[in-house]
Length: 465
Image 1 (tube, rainbow, N blue to C red):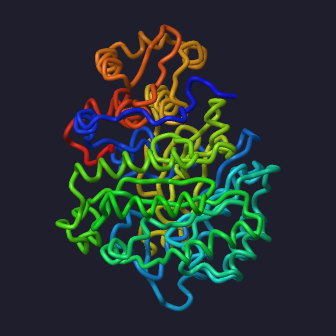
Image 2: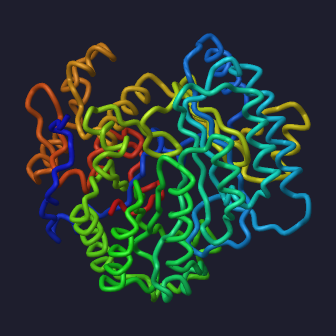
Image 3: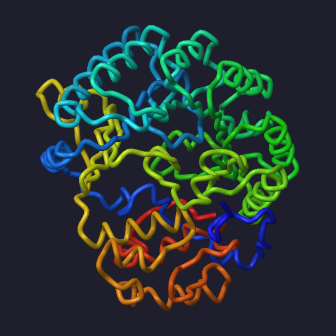
């Protein structure tokens, strides 16, 4: 079923003037409020109270497990990564993840999982016996709903056939693999050497083994990228034809991420070039038969994500865009984030602190936020904009008991400006994100961000384009 929220097959014209005007710092809205406004002295009590409330339900949940280990750290990386070759470090870490799972399952272990995701780091850093141990630790504490999405991130450079065969046998059905860029000069600049053949072989193995979906990650805005060379990477991707793509804008934040200081800032593409890379990405992938999903994903027309977007069932959480996430998300491992019962809670990023808390029987929380009623309303609207490109006013009123135009009176001037630029249309019944507005969907979401309005200029974000 095609709806007005569906991405059209023809890419809208994106003028340089619009790109320049709207390319500004802004949140990615993995959460609302964004993580940089959460309290850094957050304690475990609000999360335990949220888990207690969640224990009254029997609906499915999502579970994220963070495996932080990598053999090397890529210069562009923005993830919480631990580079270690110390023997036994993984087994000790899994011991403590199991302790955390025990606490979580004590509250919600009766609720099945609709979605499981292992992120990193590199989850396939784990040896086969460690992979099986971790999965059995989850399966012994939680059941899965029929058709659950069971996914993990892989690195084609280190993932073996033995690991993939084991993962498939255990029940994993989706794989996401990092590529970033095939150009050797770019790989040299970011410290990630991965041949086209390694990627091709890994993708073909996943298909042969019966994984239902394969996702590839790309990044534009990396050092040494040019429009001509990026076009070659996109041509290879269209040939390989993964089921889904996530195409991220590189965020250069060396003051916060010190390892990014290894990148030569003089080699970064100019802003004009970066904008041209984005326009080319959308053009080539849509010409290749992909549909644009949300702000940075692409999927084949018959993919579940595409069908979910067409039917306004697309969802998004800390694991990305999803078709069947659970009613709330719990998380285990360093830096992982739970989102349940109106509470965000992020684990500590340090192994020593993580171990210390669990040894004391505490959840290893270091940052978080308890959502207010207004937060909940704005999160819902931002979610609808980011996922389904529309907000239905009757649905809004039925859910929140308020009129959409009245609740967002202050925002109407900014919405009118977006309408004049062709980003949205309001027809009295819905706010509809128009084709050109989908390229700038973060900017549209920013209009509803009360935190950004209150603290303009105080917070650091990546650029929206």
